[in-house]
Amino acid sequence: MTTALRALSPRGRLSFDAPLGPRAWFRTGGNAEALFVPKDGQDLAETLAALPQGTPVTLLGACSNVIIRDGGIDGLVIRMAGGFADIVIEADGLIAGAAALDMIVAEQAANAGLAGLEFLAGIPGSIGGAVVMNAGAYGSDINAVLDWAEILLPDGTISKLSNQTLAFTYRHATLPEGAIVLRARLKAHQGDAAAIRAHIAEIKAAREASQPVRARTGGSTFRNPEGHKAWQLIDEAGCRGLTRGGAQVSEKHCNFLLNLGEATSSDLEALGDEVRQRVLDHSGIALHWEIKRLGNAS
Ligand SMILES: Cc1cc2nc3c(=O)[nH]c(=O)nc-3n(C[C@H](O)[C@H](O)[C@H](O)COP(=O)(O)OP(=O)(O)OC[C@H]3O[C@@H](n4cnc5c(N)ncnc54)[C@H](O)[C@@H]3O)c2cc1C
Image (cartoon, rainbow, N blue to C red; front, side, top):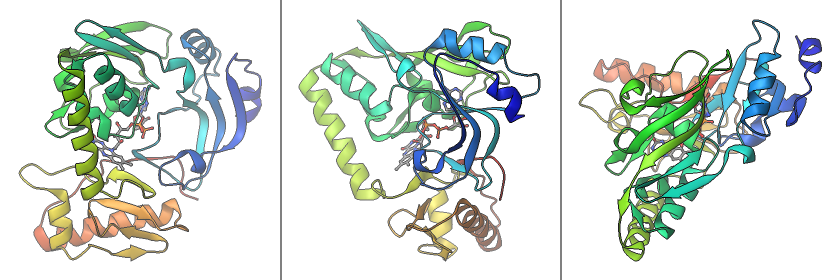
């Protein structure tokens, strides 16, 4: 496959056998067969059109919700970056590119006196990842604020999907197969900039107090099962602080896995699977991964 991929000549950056671990929040994982950072939407569409049929395509945002497996990812890995980071402020909302970081979006909204997007300040991902994951915190989520998302399909079609079409559920959006989120419009309302900034500061402080935000982690590992909190089920099953290789269940928030320094992705995944088994044995409840596991085991 690499030979066919080497024939591509995009305007953005294309590299081969490219390490992905350093880009992931967990700091683990193997290499991309080909890593493409498109310059803009046209570059992205043209490169997709030139791909050999059947080439696997994997999207990465800020890699704050993924375990990239140690054997790396085959085919073309697309990392949305600078060319997709614009934020356009409007009177009652904003339009943010897929690569705009949630925290920057929250801060720019605050500076413009736009309220309602403060919850994004505590989420370390990008807008593309936020739409796909229906990211949320502190009583709000993307579903509550999204007006539309613009997507690119593998056949080159660009379309705007309404909030209703995306049919958001908990940490999930319903997107067409192979859809790449290019940008999204988020609704907000006029407010007092100082009050909005104070709200953001509160959210950041609450997060520092309750989550290992400075660690090598991937956020919430498992979805909250209906009527339950995943962290509580994990705690009750005796998994707080559990280790496997260089991976550990966070003592601070036990729905977070940590890379203590030398963990592999296989350590993290095996630890997660052990937690699932212990929770099932203890409570009879099956936990489901919220973190996306991408690529090949080594
Ligand atoms: C310390 C910490 C705290 C966290 N707290 C929260 C929280 O409070 N609430 C919450 O909801 N999440 C939280 N997360 C998880 C994570 O930040 C969110 O899920 C975030 O929305 C993921 O965005 P990302 O850009 O990092 O996506 P990635 O992790 O890079 O990707 C996630 C998924 O989205 C896909 N994807 C990414 N960009 C695109 C795109 N442009 N088009 C199509 N598909 C795309 C990827 O293929 C992958 O399947 C936390 C994570 C960490 C590390």
